[in-house]
Figure 1 (cartoon, rainbow, N blue to C red):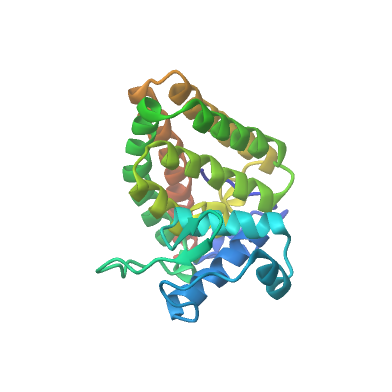
Figure 2 (figure 1 turned 60 degrees about the vertical axis):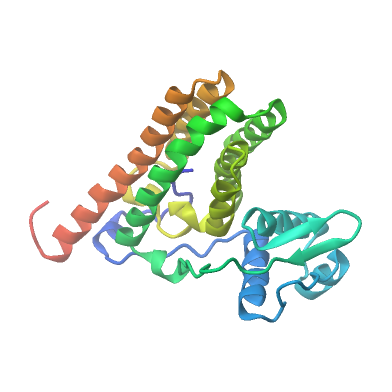
Length: 264
């Protein structure tokens, strides 16, 4: 997941502004997830009640059946719903004390994104090690598909973010521990820094080269999980996220110096 940024301005002057602009490009799936999540958390769709049918959601939101199914899958991964085949999808009762929230609006600054990266490093490093020892061939194949789709979507900001998230989500699912996948599902694509910040511009890199480097880091994680090497998987994930954190940390320091009029 990490953290790269398609579509950056020709000038690198954006690095001098703090806080930096949040990205507005969000996939149709994530928009639908956000809307349904808000309806569930506000009580508009009550705990224990059945979600509207696919046809009703399609009509209400103007999206495709594929988008609806992906959004429902993500709601389930995030612990908000349960799907009973042949019956429907139902809103889960909130767990006691389930009041943890991350406001997407707060993730428009480098400081907040760095804090989220620290959370991810602690969680996803261990998740990668567990996935290496527990993953099934089917789960490994799903990781491979997400990896290939990410590589093929370097030209499309929204798609590359979606496939980046899916790669990390598949690792969480492969742990066999629902709390990893529920937290990942809750975070959604907002956990990818380039959904909030122009990270390619911050790193002062060509967008495609930036994404290719992230793909190589993903590949190293995948290879370690494929050969069931837990320690190598942990190390590869930690390196991947640490690289993102370090790029953003340096950009934040440069932006702070420039804002204060200090020499670079």
